[in-house]
Amino acid sequence: MTTPHGKQAYLKLVPNPSHLEAVNPVVEGFARAKADVQYSSEYDRILPVLIHGDAAVAGQGIIYECLQMSLLEGYSTGGTVHFVINNQIGFTTDWEDARSSTYCTSIASTVQAPVFHVNGDDPEAVIFCCKMAMEYRQLYNADVFIDMVCYRKHGHNEGDDPKFTQPTLYDLINVHKDPREIYSQRLIERGDVHKELAENMEKEFWDSLQARLDNLKQNKLPYQYQKAELAWKKLKKTTVPEDYDQSPETGIDSKALDKILNHLHLYPKDFNAVNKIDRILKSSKAMWESGKLDWALGELSAYGSLLLEGNDVRLSGQDVKRGTFSHRHAVLTEIGTGREYNRLDGLSEKQGKFRIFNSLLSEYAVLGFEYGYTLARPDALVIWEAQFGDFFNGAQTMVDQFIMSAERKWQRMSGLCMYLPHGYEGQGPEHSSGRVERFLQSCAKYNVTVANVTTPANLFHLLRRQQVRPFRKPLILMTPKSGLRHPEVVSELKDFHTGTRFQEVIDDAGAKAAKVKTLLLCTGKIYYDLLDKQRTDKREDVAIVRLEQLYPLPEKQLDAIFKKYKNAKVRWVQEEPANMGSWMYLLFQLNGKRTLELVSREAAASPAVGFKKLHDKQQAEVVAKAFSG
Image 1 (cartoon, rainbow, N blue to C red):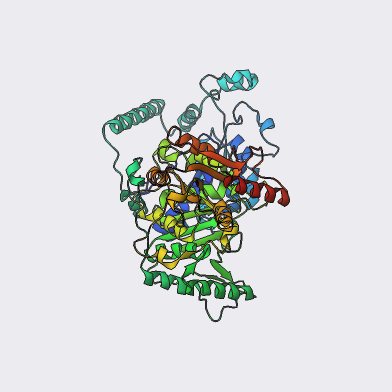
Image 2 (image 1 turned 90 degrees about the vertical axis):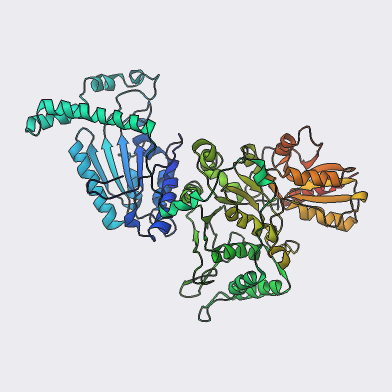
């Protein structure tokens, strides 16, 4: 668009679901991404504008979360202009029933944001407030509100008669002149325009709108892609199974891997690190030198490899710098000064940027922000990590309205990764389940990837695959807790090298098909419990196969497994109760193709029990049943 001063400005409208205010953090994330890549984080060159209703701005908690984000290092966008269309009736509710605060904009005081209250019948005053708000935003790079007090002429929807609930008010509104009439009369009385000119201007305006609409129907609007958007042009959309038959090769040169690993185990000599960090790095280095990598090294190596290839990586969430379970330590903090050292900075002069931020204690707004970031940055790996997988449901609106459905609804791809720590460790119903069943229920038309991987190498390849594939899909990843330090959760260096790729299914390397009578299919942490039982009891008649990618279901790989163990009965083993986890999904996917027996906890209303002893008893029963005759 061209401004009145003849300058070019890019105007973007973010797809907005019916869920009030849910779009707000998406707009903020989109704006931040554009600022980071297009304008070198010069926020004066970009402006988020959020339009609210009076009842929504007062009633929706996401407003508060976004305001708390507005001045934080990882989420600031240089200030947002909030324009509130205050029609004094949220839907059919009088303002006395819609809020306890004096003003609908009272929440602005959270960050001491100024609020300009203005009469919607006075266009000149509204424009004055808009200009003032813009000057404030550009000067202080902080949020500002405009509260335009007005009214709603018609009902809440096409079939609503507002007189049902506000008869007195609408008797007044029906005889009240609209803003155009009021302003025209004022201009005529001031002698600024003649009555005929005012009428002609209105007719010309409507004719102009109609002409533009007619032109748009016949001619596609010209659009010049910004630099940040060019990456989208290199990608394709896909809903065809052929694109998922086999993962692309994502291994890297051994020298590049060694370079990354060596860098990860160094920090400046003048950096006074916590004593425990030295022990952690020495132990980590010893593992690497023995030819193996654990989960943390596999994860950090994936980031390092993408950075060396020029990609940016952004990771945010609660405790992400060290990791909720103290495995990552991507950023070290110096004793005494609080100075931080980013372990993935300084890999090379031309590397991408590794942006990592401990978030505010929010799921809803932060997940929405990161999703918005991905809409502008397909060339960056963007990750949101939940403190525990269970907590993502505080952002369920973002999952339902955007992440799972946006490509279908609005033709908008996203490569967002969600890390959801998941696994039954006896930590109770609040800290066990990332609710994988909810995601699987929403899977269709190749809209996302859902995975629960068991090796550092597979994690490495899965993350790299996000950027290597010629399309973008959200990744829902159930990540481990105890597996972060489990002695079996390691991968050999060769599994990361050139020629290797993500394994959708991992076969039992020690099983001899002719001897196998029972095939155990599983995903995630329970594999290691089953493996321990298999070894302890020396069960050569049982094979354990891991389903690393749940959706899209790797049918060809599974068919090969079923063919290999054609004489074995097949059991699906899961830690979750029977009405949760992946069971219902697999039952649907394999209906009529393969008969599965279920081994799990019994159906329950709560994801897990609250007592460790009862958990241990249930877990032992699940494992024993899996191997029973």
